[in-house]
Image 1 (tube, rainbow, N blue to C red):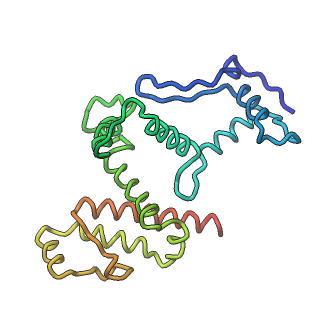
Image 2: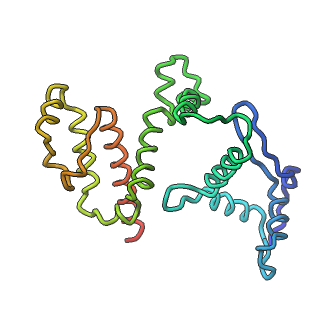
Length: 229
C-alpha cells in the first residue's frame, strides 16, 4: 500500500464553478477516495491502495467513450442541463435551438491561447471551428438518427464508407452547371456503394460535411478492426 505525500489540494472539497467562461469541477484526490469508499455501492472487501494510481484510473474512466461516443462526463452534463430545463432555470427559454447554437459558436470558433497576431492565421488554428462542429454533428446524426453505429459500419469491409465519402466529395467539386445537370438526370455516381434511394446529395458544403463524417466513420472502423486483430 502506497502512502505518497500530496499537497494540501488532496483534501480539497468538491467545487463546481463557472468563471471566465469556463465551467470547472474539482475535488481533492484524498477526499474523492474517502467519499467513494464510503458510498453504499463500494464493496467492503476492497480498498484503495494508491491515491495517485486510483486518481489516474478515475480520469481514464471519466474520459472513456461508449459506443455512441459519449463519456460519463458528457452524460453527467446532459443530465444537469435537463435538470435546468425541468426546474425552469435561468438562461434558457423556449424557441428555436439554432438560436442558442448561434450564440455559442463564435466562442468555439475563436482560438484559445493563440498568440498569433494575424487574425486569419489564428483562426486557422481553432480545433472547434464551425466546419469541425458540423462534421461531428453529422457523424452523430448518422449514429443516432440513422442507426449507423459500430455494428453497422463494421460490416462494410469493402471500404463502402470511403467510396460513399468520395462520391459526395466528387459532387461537391463539380461546377455549378454540372451539378444542375446531374440533378436533372437524377444521376447516381458509379462510386456510390449502396442503392439509389440512399444517394441524397444537398448543397456543396453539406456534401463535403457528409463526406468528412463518412471518412471519420471509415477511420474508426479501421481502428476497431486493427484493435481486434
